[in-house]
Image 1 (cartoon, rainbow, N blue to C red):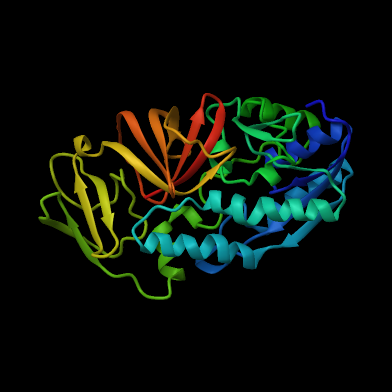
Image 2: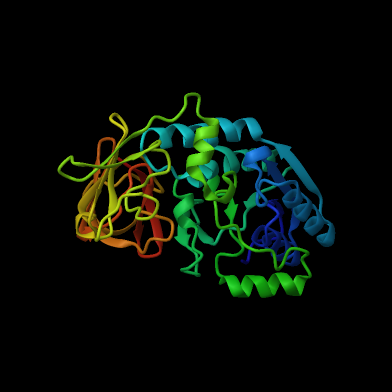
Length: 355
């Protein structure tokens, strides 16, 4: 990055990546301000050891102390519950598969961080995401994949508004994870060997069903597990946590593996079938964000339907309220509620939510 030295607000989660982002910017001569958003208090059966724990805020503070930069903790628990946790519960109860990290970036974190940056007189907001952004001479920002294909997090950022993206920096975008670890060790960061979080930050042990049951206003309702002909194969205690493509935890006996093909919220049915029944030729998406002007004609692109999904070739057709994507080859495990993000090469064109 060849930016002129400036004041930069760095989002500090307590993990190694955000701490390294602060260290890299500090080493490049920027005036760094570390900010940790206090998003969630995990206690009792919701207690987690990563991301939402007090020790994560302590790790962020210790990293800032090492660098000699200020560190602030800002309370955003109400916004996080309103825009992330409550929708997560309701979307699960409707039989869909939410993607809370997208909602968190779009509606809680980055907008608030840019607001704070302006109050601190900072010109940029930086995070530890493995993504890249190109700033054009006209001020327009283009979101690109991170260099590390295994860690690329551009999928989670498609909904960031242009007015915020134009002020973003992603110092780790050109790095691969082993390089980032080694750089953090070289800086002497106290969390350089801290394990990565592998689950949703507010859901302990990735137990989605248990979390939803504890936070839902009404108790879960049981329903049938059926095949594509409507024959009842078993029962479930609630549809929360079921997702299209799921194989494990169905509790349905049989010689051949069965997968979730559909979750019907209105009847609480979970429809299962064989692997050969998972593929679909196309999908539709709504609540779409375009990183530039909305395209006015169909175009060839690649579509990512999960965060670790290898993008699939498709033809995207914009619609009045979203887009349709027709795959070159049928795509498996297309789960309503998940994000569908459009790429043209390395560039993120836009994205929306699968319906």
